Structure formats: C-alpha cells, structure tokens
Image (cartoon, rainbow, N blue to C red; front, side, top):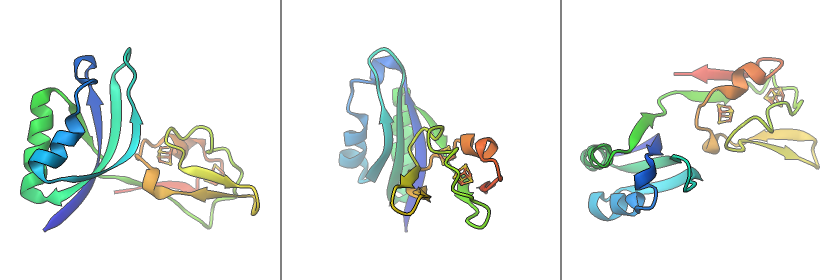
Length: 136
Ligand code: SF4
Ligand code: SF4
C-alpha cells in the first residue's frame, strides 16, 4: 500500500549542506514533493515535504532521517477554510508562512491553496470571521 504524509524536517546546522532528501529517494524508494524549503547557512534548515511510498520504505526512511539528527514533525492535522465564513478580507495573506492565500486581482477574492499548508495554525487566530478551522 502506498502512503503519503506531510512532514516538517528541521535540520541542525551541520546537516544543512548534505543532500538528505536525495538519499531518501535513492535508498528508500520514496517520492517527495517539497512544499517549503528555507535553509540558510546561519540558521537551522526547515523543509516541509510530502513524502510518499510503501509503508515499510517510509518507516525506514524516517529512521534514517532520525539517525542523521533531523528532527521530524508529522502534520497529522489539517487546517481548512470554511468557505461560507470567509469574507475575503485578506488579513491572512501576509501572515501565512507558506503563501497559502493567494489574492486574485480579477475576482478580488483570496484563493486558498491548501496543498501548501503546513498546518502551523497561525491563520486561525488571525482570521476575523474565524473561517480557518483545525481538523484532525
Ligand atoms: S482572514 Fe479569514 S476571512 Fe479574511 S481572507 Fe483570510 S480566510 Fe478569508
Ligand atoms: S495553518 Fe494557516 S497560516 Fe499556517 S500554513 Fe496553513 S494556511 Fe498558512
């Protein structure tokens, strides 16, 4: 069975230069989709991935990552928009760290691109009509 999970990887400084993700594909047969990457030489690296593959390969890949010193956080929760409540006020656009909310100049609406969401929850409190909801 193929599974697909969204995870957040935090790299200690010494690992930033190493190509950990390419090993995941080569040695563990995993596919990945990078949803967000911010790695700076001075700071800890952050990578949000959608990782998919066979459960056994996934488990081995996660073990490998843990051994190398990467911190892993699973995104088992989803943040979704209640379309009936959203007033398209735009308050969420600049606060979302991954750019989920995309203003459409033509329609004057704020599109919600859920694929990019890392479920950080920042938008939940920031949304005036409480349109952003946490689902488990
Ligand atoms: S802050 Fe809330 S109401 Fe305003 S555009 Fe974003 S989701 Fe919609
Ligand atoms: S939870 Fe909200 S602020 Fe955080 S990434 Fe998702 S849409 Fe953006």
